[in-house]
Image (cartoon, rainbow, N blue to C red):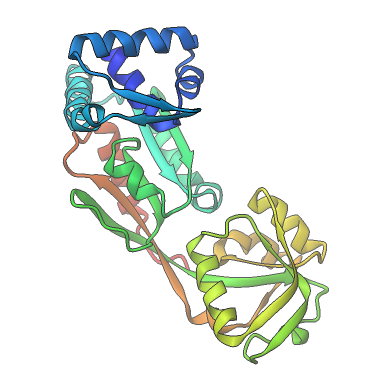
Length: 297
């Protein structure tokens, strides 16, 4: 059985389509189709159903998934067995939200790259509520994300950092007009967001709902950096972990607005699946995370 066919099978699950798998693996789509057909012939089962444009696992495919995961883990273990112990090779798949990747992980990634330049890193930015699924199903080797209290049977979670949450406005904004300690208010400004399902925005939404606070407008932006530019130019306010805005606060481009969220903390954890083989790459990366485990705030 060709392990490339198994990798293609898992990539289809990860990307959600034959076309997505072909793009990620740099194959022609016909190659992906041929590989799956060969795998289905070898196993004597049908692995996927296609309903419209949606690809779903058949019951047989779902039943065989744990065995395929185990075979791939064994293959990666054997492939890395003869590697020089002082030289890290292969791949490492990391699932992480944008804010942590951009503003907290750069020094750790640099350390890892300096020690392991031959390891191919795959960084997948996801909402924190989706990352446990990636770890549970083997789509990522490790997840670094804000703790959203989602547990898995075989998932190991470890806290590494704790962060405060801040409401941020432009430096020229009248902070007195944004009193979050008073209830039943409408603020004549916009609320800027790039992920309504983020854990910190959920805390914010709960706070304003309890106080019956509303805004004139809500603006969805594509990235945290674009939101920063909007806040600096007084287009609205935003809420993020405080470390995201450290540089802008220090340079007095923006200001922190007091609120009950000042008492709220969110934890960053890392997670991995203890049933899967722990590669030397993953072990070293965890060592770097553990050595950085301190309260940044």
